[in-house]
Image (tube, rainbow, N blue to C red; front, side, top):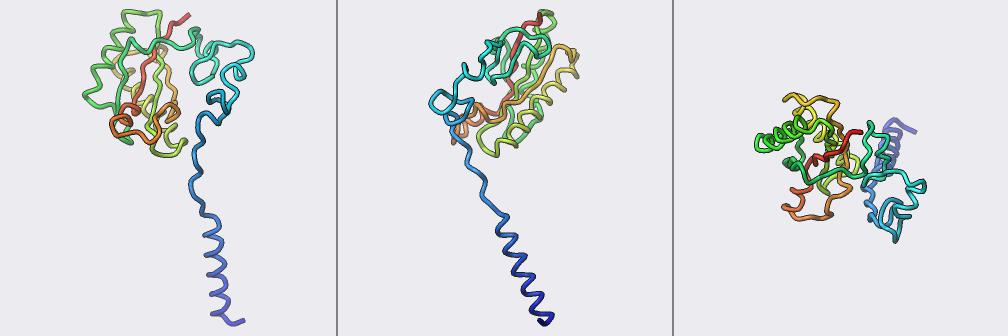
Length: 186
């Protein structure tokens, strides 16, 4: 085999290998078809919590989370902080909400705040989970910067788990947030 034939065969083999490795992004399953979804496809909350543990909406045991003992917390006391598309910096217009959170925690020492990061439906589940985490940590950093003790804060991410699929721009904007969930410290 001459040099040209060897290079051509190598080029064809490389192209075939490259094309074989490229695949489309997998489709996200419907929540009702997953184990933690609704009862049609999943086992439902009772099958995930057979021992009756105190669990949050994410199905995780809240009793082990730094001593928190209430299952859901209160989402109505403090307002959510909203973000621009694919951003995690706290906008100046949202900062008064965080000042209100600081004042609430100063007046109510028996409580703490769980910062729950969310993202809209666009992007992969992994990316949105990471973005929700960056948003929650950005709010945590801002709050500690204005004097809230780190022992009064906890952050987690829900990513796009609770977002509205194929949402309008207005609905998607509501999904890009960090919720401030007030929980009682035992």
